[in-house]
Structures are given as C-alpha cells and as structure tokens.
Length: 365
Ligand code: GDP
Image (cartoon, rainbow, N blue to C red):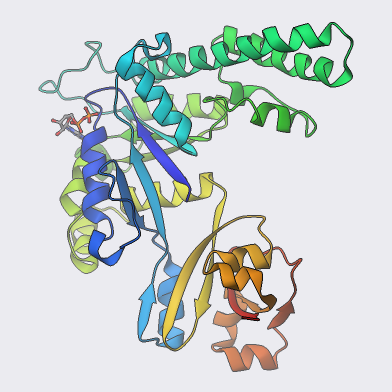
C-alpha cells in the first residue's frame, strides 16, 4: 500500500508527531496483516460519510479504511554525500510515495534549534537541498549515458536529453524537480528517473498550543505557506504536543478536549486527510447489513481493479458493480428508494470509480 514518509530536522517535533500517530493508530492485534515495522504507523482515515452511512444502514460493524505513515530517521545534513546514515535517509525517502515534511514553527527557548535559530524556510532548504543534490546526481548520470546515444541522432534519446537538460537546469538552480513543467509526453521519462523531488510533498507546520488556540497563522507559518505555493505543495498546521496528548483519548473525550481549546478538527486528522488526497487516493464504500466499510483505491482505477482492493477474486471474476453515489444514497435514505429513483447504476468493467461511490460487486467465483 501507499505510504507517506515523515521527515524533518532534529528537534522540530517529528517524534512527538509520530508518537501521536502510533498512539492514535489501529491496534496491531486488530490488524494482523500490518507490517510490525516500528517505523510504520497505521491510522484510520477519518471520514464523516462513514458515520452517516452507519446511521442509515445500522450495520453490525463499521470498518474505516487505513493509511500508513513511515517515520524516516537518519541524518539529513550531508546525506547526498552518501555517507552511512545519510545514505539510509535518502534510501528511505526513495521508498515512500509522498513526503510529509515537518517544520518547526514554534518558539521555545528550552528546546534548542539545530542551527541556533528558528527559521522554517532555512530548515526546509536544508532538507530540500540534500534531496536536490541527490537528484542532480541521478540526472547527471543519466545525462552522460543518454548524450552518448543522442550523438547518433536517435530521436528518443534526443527527446530524453531535452527533458534531462530542463531538470538539470532547475536542480542546479536549487529548485525541486517538481517545479519543472513537463508535457504529457515527457511525463513518463521523468517518472522513470525516480527522482526524490518529484514526490508530492506536504509541509507540516508544527505550531505552539497558543497559536493553535489563536487560530491564526503566525509569521513563520505564513512564510511556509508562501514557499509551498511556489512549489505547488500543501501545508497543514498541527500542534504535535496537543496531538500526542489527545491521541489515546476516546473519540468523544477527544472532541470535548479540542472544543475546550477552540479547535474544530484535530490537526492529525487534517494531516491524514491531506496526505491521503496528496497521494491521489479516494474512498469507496460497501454498505451491507453486516458491515459498512470504507475502502481505499487509487483515483482513476476502474471498477474491477477497485474491487480487487477487497479481494483478488473480486477482480478476477468481476461481472458488474451496482453503484450509487454517496450523495444520492443519503438523499434517498436507503438503497431501495435510490433504486426506485433510478439512482443505482449497473456499472461494467470500464467504469472509473468515483470517490464516495457505494458499491456492491457481482462476480463469478
Ligand atoms: P524531533 O527531533 O524532530 O523528533 O523532535 P521531538 O518530537 O523529539 O521534539 C523535540 C522537542 O520539542 C521535545 O522536547 C518536544 O516535547 C518539543 N516539542 C514538540 N512539539 C512542540 C510544540 O508544539 N511546542 C513546544 N513548546 N515544544 C514542542
């Protein structure tokens, strides 16, 4: 399954956030197939729609879908020079599908900052620079090989060379590869380079309890947002401390605690939802009397593939999917009424599943 890696400089609140994730996470006992890797935290994806469907269908059981975060340890500075732990850091980033980059946006004299001063933009630059240097190395290597082929006027090689040169120029200017505009024809070439700075990124601004309560961006957060815009990246604010405190509370207690602080939705929940969206993931539902359940699929998947998320037999023997949108089901109150109104569609193997579809798969065994 897809995973988002948590990175950041020392003392920014990474471990606090990751603790919150593992504390809030699903119990290993209830999740026998989960990796028992201590660097992986599996969380439930909060989804109001699942609660609503549970109210409507009144099943015996409700099962949310889950999402994985990976804690990426290792030394950041000098990582691209490829020594020991730094190398491991880059190798770990290579394995994740998106990056959650934690930046310190809180002041606290008691907690030293690695570079002596709290400056989120400098922090972002330190990490990004290592990733950019590592990418530059990959691009340079490929460039050397492809230029040899291009000398023979090979059309494909020339096309690739043009892409590599665009990438090289951006990276040399200290910019991430994701800032480079590529055409649909160039996209597969870029993908085949497996660059680190093309991975989608979400900046996680760790703010103080006071700033969470104030409900307004502080100067540092504003800077991060501005920077993120230039990269086409997203920002989410959290107080890692608060999240760690509320992580093992029951849902009701948690809501109450957050309300007292004047917080509508926990920062961790927002982080989960944003990371999920960032990865291009969507949710469809199955809603039977026994169980109402949310399932994760990759947006763009067709019905048989999406069915395969539940079981490979569903994909192999796929016949059709009885499908109703979440909104229609809620509007008509139940399946029978939605059917009567003609809102339940019989979708075949070419149907592209939409986020929020409520589906019943018909298949041959
Ligand atoms: P890491 O090195 O990035 O993993 O950082 P830690 O999670 O260990 O946090 C470093 C220190 O900052 C710890 O003492 C945390 O308790 C503290 N810390 C984390 N988040 C906050 C916060 O929102 N406010 C304050 N004041 N301290 C925090």
